[in-house]
Image (cartoon, rainbow, N blue to C red):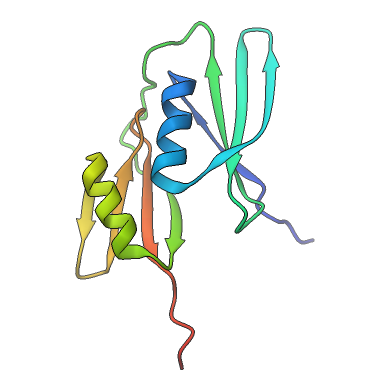
Length: 124
């Protein structure tokens, strides 16, 4: 059997704030929305992949979620690493950097971490 990654879910406390963050920080825009009884789900992504980030906002849970030790993250790659780093510095969302490994992490408004990596070189 073969499987293809479809989406990852992050529960968020303020949907508008999260949508603004993901659009500014990563260029992710709303792809689809589902409103149900007591919740709203918005899938965000971009045109480089069909993988989506599902942002779920529960009406009766306005506070941040307890993410435990936060030993998980998403990872993204960019061919504009330095430009992205400057933007994320200006936004104040860089929470960890490992210059030796050439990567850094940004933190969203709810405490989720996203690893930012350079696009792999195609040169051999």
